[in-house]
Image 1 (cartoon, helix red, strand yellow):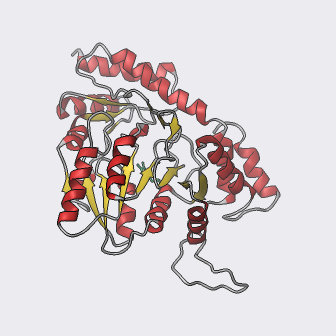
Image 2: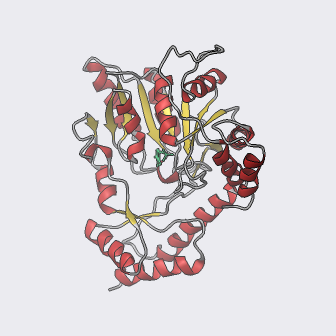
Image 3: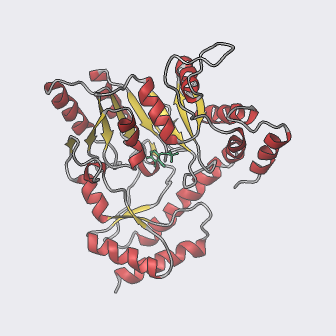
Length: 363
Ligand SMILES: Cc1ncc(COP(=O)(O)O)c(C=O)c1O
């Protein structure tokens, strides 16, 4: 926590706003809007997953539709496609950002259309905080007039050409889950430039209650709004977001400068114009075996590290769905490792990690 969170939570208690609405919710939304800029409107929700679900629904996705989704991601990018009874179609990554490959995306769209179904939406992800190729993905989406859900769950504080992530999609989403760069313990947000979309998101997130003195409902709603207590945590966290980004980037710089001399270790560099919050510091090793040797050596010292995300097209739940893959995400999964990346790590912590890795590389 940054320092002021408790004050805002106490405010909620003192004023008895213990509900999924109230001043903290409004002020948290305002703080995010002021941070992202680009005239965005923000709806604070219970989770990032809920934001993707509402986003897809608001873009008109329904039963039987197809939705293109980055394969190299966390399952929460794809699960809401299933909630809506739609079919995910997975697209592999390119090597410069590890995110959705615009060439494969185009191929996938052309092929789906030739098979008789134009995809309804694209879920593109800024994985580990690295922006996807925003301009190229947008160009393909516009060519075929398909809207984008911009999954910025891991990318608050990241930017492309100086513009903050979550403002590029037709709908953007953020996550404030406990592991994210800032947190409300659990929480998310839907980001849009359209006031009408924000109002519809809030309407659906509060059980789709019609404007009537009694309880009346003309469509199915959800209980997805953020609690005013948790939004108090969010207000405090927004005050330290830039510090958190600096801390995560400094972790990455430490790892990179310490391991740069070892040709076995590769890092994902920022292409020109890309700014990553470096939510997690990741490395690539030459082989699965070396990756595992390092992971297990760290574990032996009680240090947790994790393989990169296992692609969705390889997951038992999703492997039966169509995919357009090149092998890149599978290779990243085999060879990649997320190193300890918390914003509270100190130099001694980072040195411990690096020392163990170097020991394994020089064995
Ligand atoms: C890429 C990605 N998308 C979506 C989510 C879902 O966010 P939440 O945990 O807030 O539901 C997460 C994180 O959990 C994520 O990493």
